[in-house]
Figure 1: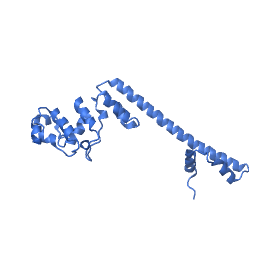
Figure 2: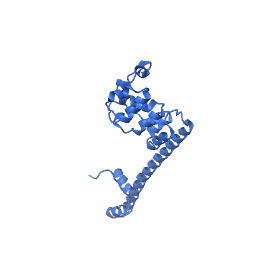
Figure 3: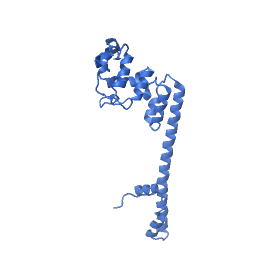
Figure 4: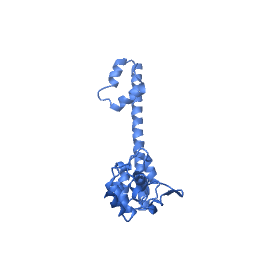
Amino acid sequence: MFNNLFINFKTEKELILHIIEKCSSQSTSQLYDRFARKEWKEKYREDGIPYQVYRWDNWLMGDLIVFSDDEDIIRALHKIRHSRILRSDSLRVRSMSVNKNIPDDIFEYYLNRNDDDIKQLTRMSKVEYKINGEKRNRMITSVIAHLISKERKKKEDETKDKLRAFLITTDATKSVLTGKSIDDVVEETITEDTDEQVLYYMNKLLGKVK
């Protein structure tokens, strides 16, 4: 009875949507390969050579994530993005964020999801999106610029903490040279008000005590 349902599918889209909806947890299913028409399969080629990306359903779904231009299929795949059918040790990691046909709301989802991933944002910036392409490129560029600025600020703050720790150490050394005892200088330098990051970088700067 289950098999007969597939025989009645009139279009490839119907079959694909059914696989996504009903078999999204079966990462090893081969329903498309078993029930798709020959003419549907023949269009899957790579460099002009027949390419059985459809042999396993998760292989085909992985390709559709990136290359599908059908909004219904794109939305159905986005809905099951965490499903096992889209996961496999042998399947290359793919992201719908680089599908040039994704609608605005899904694009914004991936833009927000990758707002701290410069590598993925750069990949997205190279995509020629068919929907609101110029606007999307501006949005990606803005997020990248913000991330670069954020990373720069983080590096500046870390450097300032290192410099602060160094100057405190240097100042303490001068105090010893002017006659203060080492113990007094240590107690004055390391107090309960000393910033945690300063302590961390002073330890890093001075090295482990043997």
